[in-house]
Image (cartoon, rainbow, N blue to C red; front, side, top):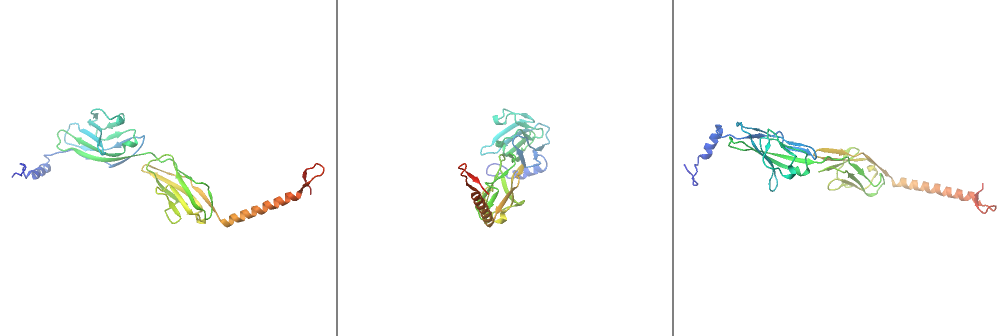
Length: 269
């Protein structure tokens, strides 16, 4: 029976029967991981393995998915066909099982890679997609503060988590080793890099540190001790210091008297 386009209506059923009977064969591709996390400057292996009944060498094509797909490499077996793009030269290898080795990695290599493996005797092409992330490790962070001491009831005291290197950082603030979250007094910046204490209380007298993480590494700062002084204590310190200074001045003034002999001041007891 024929359809309007002149094709047999039973073709899909016949196709399924042929596939079930093993008359139609294709390349089967498997991968141990759909996500590979790489480090800039090091190597990354996009590992796949193909299976085929044909003894012929496979035609392997790797593409980087973009708005317009970028052909990374094409090969027959491990032999690369044609010229590689300048940004891939001396960095690309295709292994016997179809895997792609990139070394050294660049940040621009990050993305979704699709591999196609076809063999002459096989009816269907095998396909697989692997996502690659590329990052720079986090360098050791440090907590920056204007002063390690602060007066009770001071407003908008800030602690800044700083580090030189590292891509895609996420920040966590720790007080005495326990994570901090936003509340009415403790405010975290949108990226959580800066912690602001809007109104300092004695309860804020503690040890603070920050943890910075990305997909491949993490770093933790050296703890910083924040000392909070009570305002009443400050008044006592200032009062005591003022009294001591006054007593000292009175003693000095009482001791030093003018000398007629030399026309100078000298201490007489």
